[in-house]
Image (cartoon, rainbow, N blue to C red; front, side, top):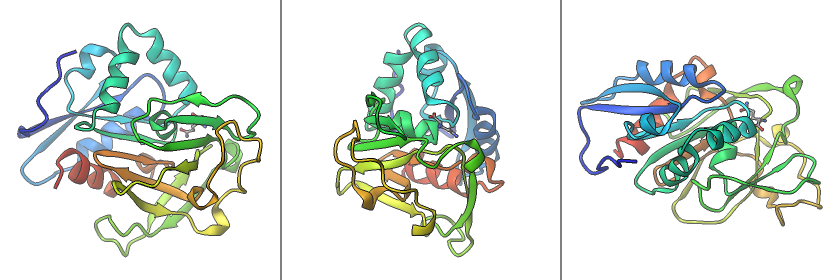
Length: 241
Ligand SMILES: NC(=O)CC[C@H](N)C(=O)O
């Protein structure tokens, strides 16, 4: 794969959205609506290595993490190229919901009895529980104040659909917690027979996390009708300003 130089930002920034399965069209539409000062955003679907080589930054959408990772494995050369991309500190990558699961170092299914599954490890020290917020029927929305967004006093409508929760997040100075759910919406702590080792209950409610150029959200900003999380990721992680 040809790696584009990350230092100099062109006027047109090409952002890829992994388009193997899930809510990728929505991310493309939201990114295309952004008008960052001095740049034009072009968002393209990424289904293979050739398309990945054309993008500067990547969104891994929500969907079904097991399906996304199987399809990546079955597409020639794509899985190793994705691993290289998401683990490169100079690359901006954002994972939403299933994308957050894939950005973790390891995930465990909500019940805790199955073995943990290795993630793509874009976000260091992150382990998640898949589906800890319950089934599709237990999906919910919550207006959250996210101080880092533009118009910070305006709540952001966070939408959770079979969302992952943070099992544990190693403390690191580079990690910023951008949004946390109120305690009444946080699921009960995972069972003690966790395949992921000891969990940290204090991390469970963290739903928007940034680490350098990497970001994860356990909710779905691309379904909210509000482009402020996309705007934030582009400004801070992609454009670095
Ligand atoms: N909305 C979502 O992305 C759901 C994620 C799904 N529970 C998974 O395991 O991948």
